[in-house]
Amino acid sequence: MTRRSLRVPGPPRYSGKVTDSLPPCPECSSELTYEMGALLVCPLCGHEWAPEPAEAEVAADTVITDAYGTPLADGDNVTVIKDLKPKGSSTVIKVGTKVRGIRLVDGVGDHDIDCRIDGVALQLKSSVVKKA
Image 1: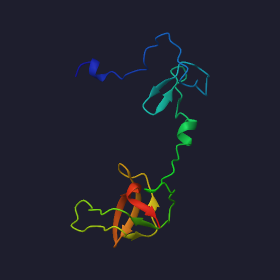
Image 2: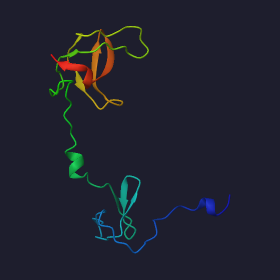
Image 3: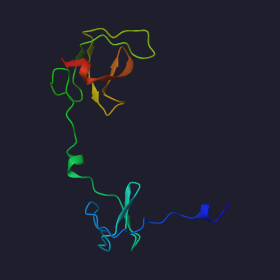
Image 4: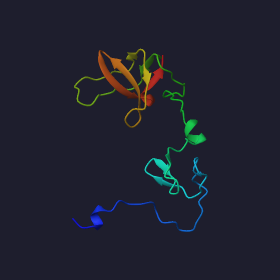
């Protein structure tokens, strides 16, 4: 091993530019803060802290709507409006199938409804259901 491979990376070099996008250190009020992963770091006092979420991220609680624009909530009953063939299954979920007690989740891709149909747990897209 060479000496270079054992070096621990330090803070980025100060370029002389003051950036307004990063907040000052809450401990020593230094403006020389920088990002390291998900944390903000002060090179003067060594304080590390998580940035507070922006107001836009707090208000990002989106409303999930069905295919016709009606807002959905946890526990709602919905009806499937399109034939669906789940991956890895030979069965088909037919148009008009009623789904009771849905849960709204941040699923994979656009799949934002968690439910059970005929005892099988599935995730559905809100664009293929209507509120019953």
